[in-house]
Amino acid sequence: MNAEDLIADRTPLPEAITGRLREQLVFLAEVDKLKTVLRQSPLAAAERRENDAEHSWHLALMVPLLAEHSDEPIDVGRTIELVVLHDLVEIYAGDTPLYDDAGRVDQQQREEAAADRLFGLLPADQRDRFRARWDEFESRGTPEARFAKAVDRVQPLLLNWLARGGTWRTPGVTAETVRARKAVIGEASAPLWDAARALIDEGERRGWVES
Image 1: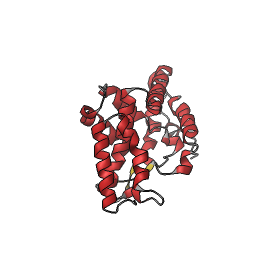
Image 2: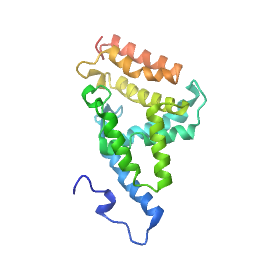
Image 3: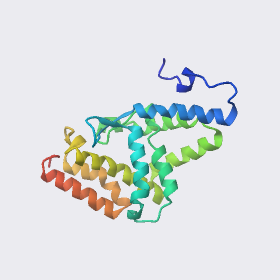
Image 4: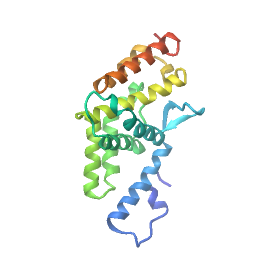
């Protein structure tokens, strides 16, 4: 089966399912691919890497749990939408690890093309809404987007701490590199940024990330 094929093409839906609902079900089938996209972050509970769907679930839980630490009031429901949508483009664009400088060069271009393709499967109104939410996350122009980005940075930080290094041990990565790439947390939440720096600082002291 060609990688360009839709999941729904492999076992087509009954012809009795038509119109808007058919488009929505085709989209839901396609995003099942998110479960196959591996990230670099290690799981805390098992000896394997997490996948994008697991990451998205964790973020969706973190938003209502940690919303009280946002520096600005946020709409929790809208923020959950942002975190569950933002990684869907990796179905086509692939995961770009935070410390992969070469992969980051064309990341935006790859992900925008993927967003056009994936959200284009939806009915027009939902296509436009979901794409707008994805763009909102990327631009960080709202309190919700800034907080969504913050928890997206906190989650792998916590996993790396629990793994006693994890991706912090990537060749060339230092504690200062980690601080620089995680600084965006501070745009949304002073308490979360304080906690993040405490994890990085202690990880550096323990030798889990190079100084």
